[in-house]
Amino acid sequence: MYNPLKIDRENLTLMGIKFPDLASLEATANAIGSNMFEGFEPSPELIQLYLEWKQNIISPTVFLQRLKEMYALQIS
Figure 1: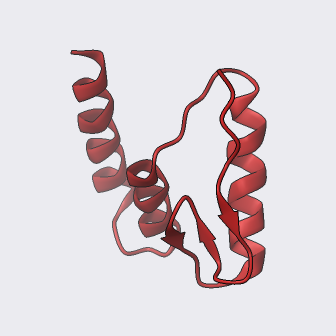
Figure 2: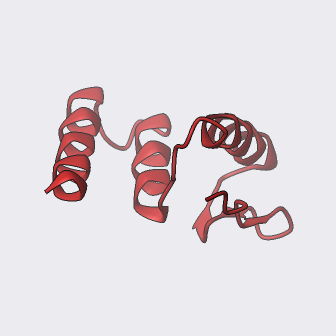
């Protein structure tokens, strides 16, 4: 079932997650939106994790580890 992304361009948020600028918000929303046509269901936690990685707050290794942990919980 398709659920539209909650985008607030005025406050620069995507599913409640604050972005530093409009360009990064729109790029992320476009990438996520195109994957949603294939059945991907984003969560605010996943968007936050992605944003932290893109802003170099966490390393690629930490990003992948947390991603594995998030999806291991969903599979169980």
